[in-house]
Image (cartoon, rainbow, N blue to C red; front, top):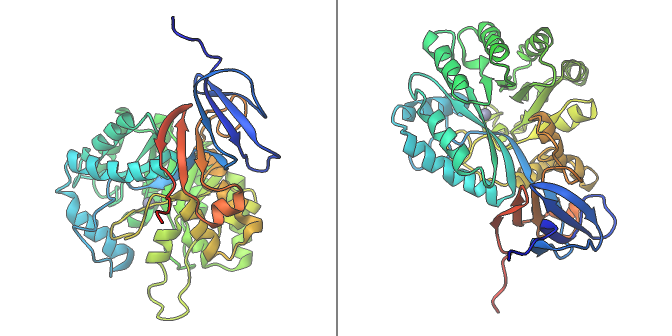
Length: 411
Ligand SMILES: [Zn+2]
């Protein structure tokens, strides 16, 4: 006779952020059923966190799986952002579904074993690549659903308003299951028209929006105000995010205050992509080069929903990347001169507030919440974040989804 258990998973001796003492976490049917010291009951799977820090699965709000792992095909990024776009554009025609799937899977598996459990993948659609990258992404979404919720955001990297075929591709992808829509006005011949059409498409398909925006350090023009205005006009507050927005690093304090108030009022979220932003911005300076990363912690202080995310991995936009969001948050804190008193805020940007930006329901370690849990090889928050602790294991909806044993010395 099969034994009946009161829980599917009992994770014992977990240290929670801001909590006192060690807690057990009990999971039933993918949800957290109880949290407390020395819980009684039996479970189909019982694991001991050994006093280590347990976090909810991390959230990567902005990554390009379709063009990751391309360093072996093109190494040169000497041309900055324009050069990187041109380099990948030259390769895209040869992308096959299988090729995108294999490279995407490699990056996805790295991210999963670094503790990421929710991800928004930005996928390029245009006549060069057609729907092949999108098709690969939908396969990845299905095949890795045991470990990660992949949200597919389709967008026109190469411009949209010059060719009606681009909008048709976007509409087709939305009809075939894309989760949301992105935009990239700065590469469009008519940026304002692109924003108008993208908002109209989003409203027609009832999907959220995530724009690549204001990705340079020229403070004399910006698309951010127009995005805020269109967000309010469409009634899309809380459903629009922008990535990069690095112009926010190049304006004075008074202008920044004004933009923070506008973004908070319009409910537009902002994602900093420190690895790419640092690598591509400020290349015209030979010394005292600016960092060129949006100061999203200041935006968060002003009530804006913010995240820090990966963007590109091992390609001409960013020839770096191991999929670790804790490393990315750590990089952000390091470059913004943020010490341990703000480590918790930076951890939020790859977990709690990132989840808010993606409107993930029931996120976090609380009774009734989704049982997405990772165990880090650290016994407190400051050590985990400052020391870029390794995730040792993860549970997606209460089911073990990866293990990553700690390194051991062999004397
Ligand atoms: Zn991007």
